[in-house]
Image 1 (cartoon, one colour):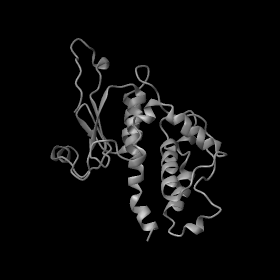
Image 2: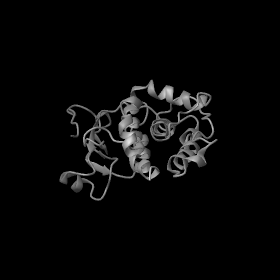
Image 3: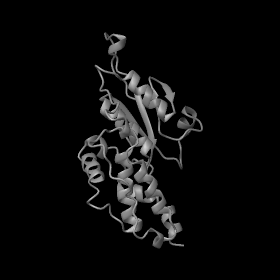
Image 4: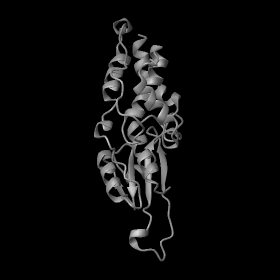
Length: 220
């Protein structure tokens, strides 16, 4: 569970915080499940370079000790030096504040618009994948506008959302993101080249399972 580190002889400011991240478990109850919010916090802590531990939570069999730790709360959430924090947005702000330079990396994006990059794509994708009349999608795609913000920030949803679009559209709609959408492919290529993304991203099968109910409705 939570990691402990020696603190004897260290100043208070030099002590490493004890952080544990709780994320949604996959279908096997142990692996990382499909949850962009979980992955987002996972990547933030990874990129900060802080020591932390990760616990996957099986929502079907949530352990009693976790129910007592954060009653009525679903992952992701963290404990920071024993204090439970459950609001994802506030957790991000808190981590950026307490894990600050020069000891830890500053993660605020250079381009504020990168925080919302990909939302247009995901909105179109959601309508595309949930449409029970596939013929209505002819001539259209979930692609939307190409992403204009280059590079991998590690903090915006674009990488996770584009990953879901790629996997789910191919599985359930036999659609692949066109190669001419260079902005999207640049994001995906950059993302999959980074350890902090590939090691926090759920497997393709978990993403497919997350959309299986939608797929069943489409076949009725």
